[in-house]
Amino acid sequence: MEKFRYYNVSFAGLPLGQHEFEFPITQSFFDLFEFDQDFQHPNLRLDLVLDKKNNFLELHFQLSGTIEVNCDLTNEPYEEKISGKSSIIVKFGSEFDDSDDEVWVIPQGEFTINIAQMIYEMTLLALPKKRIHPDVQSGKSHSEMLELLEQYSLEEEEFDEMDEDELNEESNDEEIDPRWEALKKLKNNNNG
Image (cartoon, rainbow, N blue to C red; front, side, top):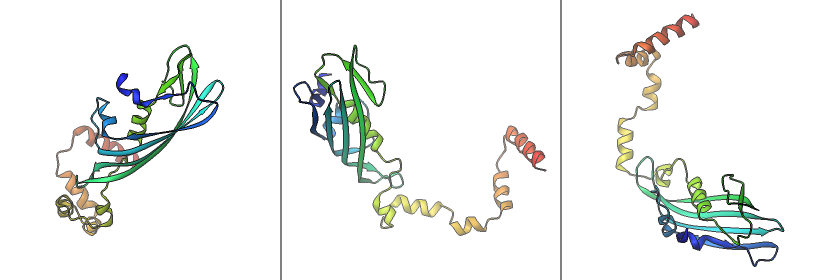
């Protein structure tokens, strides 16, 4: 894990109490991992507060910054603000164990803890599920993709004007799987 050495937090010589650390997180950090990311140009900062106790450590993480992602509707890149918080407790034991999300165990006698994986996971969890360009949300986008979506989508009034028979008629035009037809009959028998 030599490539993650920069993300080792040394606690050996620290007195009891809180200690603050700051890590800039850029593309070079994500290049250390052998996974493709669906974002570009990360400009993030991780603030870490390490609270050293007699027999354990408390680590409090605060991630903030921006990344560039592509809009789900237009596929145009834009800058998205992200942030996240997390905390873990680090105890000392016989061997390393990070299988628990809230409590890590590191071997007795260790004097550093590597937080690279934690930063990576926090970033992925902070990514938005829906990525909509701010211009699309404000209605200012003149994207070719949006124009195509508008051109081929049903207007709400058109959809409302279609009565249930028309909608059923359109769906009946397609060949229906006999299993679905049998289920439909069962449903109608139970309702009628």
